[in-house]
Amino acid sequence: MRERREGEDDKVAFPELFFDLVFVFSLIQLSHTLAGHYSLMGALEALLMILAVWWVWIFTTWVTNWLDPDRMPVRAMLFALMFGALLLSTAINDAFGDKALLFAISYVAMQVGRSLFTVYAMHGHSPDNARDFLRITCWLILSGVFWIAGALIGGEAQLFIWIAALTIEYISPAVGFRVPGLGRSEFDDWDVLGAHMAERCALFVLICLGETILVTGRTLAEMEVTPLVFVLAISSFGSTVTMWWIYFRFGQERAAAQIESDESPGEVARTIFTYAHIPVVAGIILCAVADEFVLAHPHGAIDLKTASAIIGGPIVFLAGNIWIKSSVAPRLSVSHLAGIGLLVLAAPLALVVEPHILLIVSFVILVIVAVWEYLTLKSVR
Image (cartoon, rainbow, N blue to C red; front, side, top):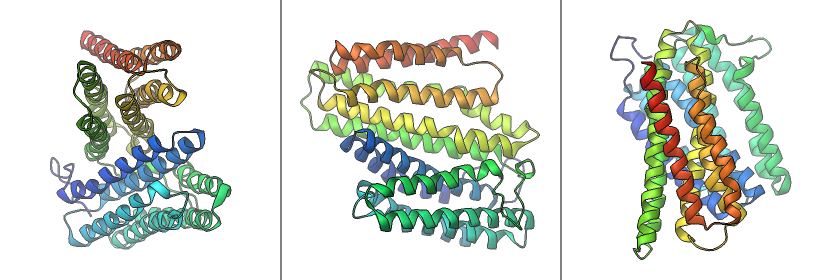
């Protein structure tokens, strides 16, 4: 267990950072898969895999909120999870094909194995938390049946069975992981390290932003440098920097402070970190896909997939930031709502402009949001 010493327990340990490295590969696989299969069905499949990758990562983050990663057994657990995540990631591009069973088994083994380890690690130190994770394990075993069944059945039914599996997992915290005979978990009693959770989620957001830079850099490396390519590079990189600013300038630190001071830290942490970060992550991944589309084909008519990625990515990202910031402050994020409105109004431009123009417009709107929020919050301080 982590020793709760002021100023020391909130720090992210090196084994946690090492654990995150494998998710760089996961995000690359996710963006490539979405870009290569960008259709309604492809988007649903990609969304499901994004939710699965996020869920296995955030559950591990909750575990390291209590267990000390600098202790050898916990390190061994993290390294085992890394290998599982590596296998999981290699299966992402064909998770609804020949690698479905590899994806399902890797995912279920990670989720159930980690939770069982946590029950064992906590039973002598924190019986209440051990019981919580026993309940969690029961839910994960139930969902695991659906994951593996979906992989074995395959075909059109696989997506719907996996949606059922993911639904089971996502509603479980909302019902307190209630299990007959074991009761339910009370999140008010969860001892949460707010600064640690905030930093862990911020690091994952950084990994996602890094993926947009990798996509831009990889695509630019294969292109002849022209004035237009240079402008697009500025726009793509500028969008990444602006998203960093919007998320980190005001939201991340306030989330940590809110949890540390709230009377129900577990409930707040569940909302902000477990759920509200999902659209932030998904929006950044969609922006990376948009960059890849536009850099590869900057001219010509804009097809539906390119337009939806260019406009949809920032909208989803801003929606996630609204969720986070409204959870830690009573004021409404007017700048973010206005940004979403401007993006919606900009959508019809896809009928009359080329892809690179629409990408630049979305970048300018993100800059407007960032500057608006900065000036607004600066004036009320």
